[in-house]
Length: 265
Image: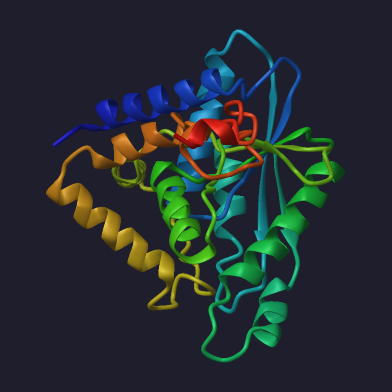
């Protein structure tokens, strides 16, 4: 059983690797850290605050929570936590819960619409706050699960990149926990005793495809330890010429066409 110091060091190494490999943070950045009240975003905030102290460059952090007006949401938890932590923060109030409930047919999952509404609101907030970057709390397991969701159900080989530019081209989105294991984050959250706020909008839904994929990957990891690490390496080791996407590789010009006469004896 690892202790608090060991788990903290593992997360710090994972975040440092992501920051360095993908050049996530530069001098003068103002980063909006999206805080949901879940274990991942709490861990991400702590990690970025740590690197803000030890990094040889200067950058700003502002924590932002989107209050979606979910019934029973404990509105006092995050402001109290952030005030005690001494972090600049902003709470955005927008009733996306009602929109999601009104627009989603009974029996259908709310995740897709909820995610789009959240994303648009947070992008606008980042611009209003003068932030040039926005940080999300997705970790290694999320990235692998998303790859298989797209692979099995959307017909795409695509996942969550550790760093990308939004469609408008005016904001860089970061995932500093990209190389961190969910189990380490869970252990860290237990050690830190974060005031976790469960999501009653999507977290209460059963039989989501993501849950099925998550269980599949968990079973693989149990049967073949370290498979998650291998799959994560695979996502960083792509050979376009050994796939079938003609927009990534020019198969037409691969070789000179064989003269027809050479095919006749």
